[in-house]
Image (cartoon, rainbow, N blue to C red):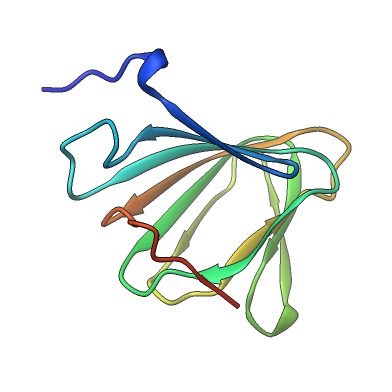
Amino acid sequence: MEIIYGNEVTEISNPGVLSRKLLNFDNSASERVSITEVHVVPGASQPRHTHNFSEQIWYALQGKGKVLLHDNQEMDFKAGDVIRFAEKDVHGLFNDGPTEFVYISVTSPPVKREVIKQ
């Protein structure tokens, strides 16, 4: 069993985006999954990218936004929605709402700096 206390959660900040690494290779022995809480301010985005060897599941907790897909496609994503990306699926997010967008990302297997921008 493991317990990760709040002071053991790493935060990574990019312009308009805060990622809280709740469970990952820095604070856990888990080799099968990582969990991240992501906060995106209005007007901010995470660029399109892929993961060659991992799938990802996003669960929207708060707000609304646009999921950025391949070929410049977009789809609505709002609190309560769940989306799964298979390995190599292009994905990103743009917060087009008036409030902060918050979602949980579950990645399996965990990504160790292997992100490919599109």
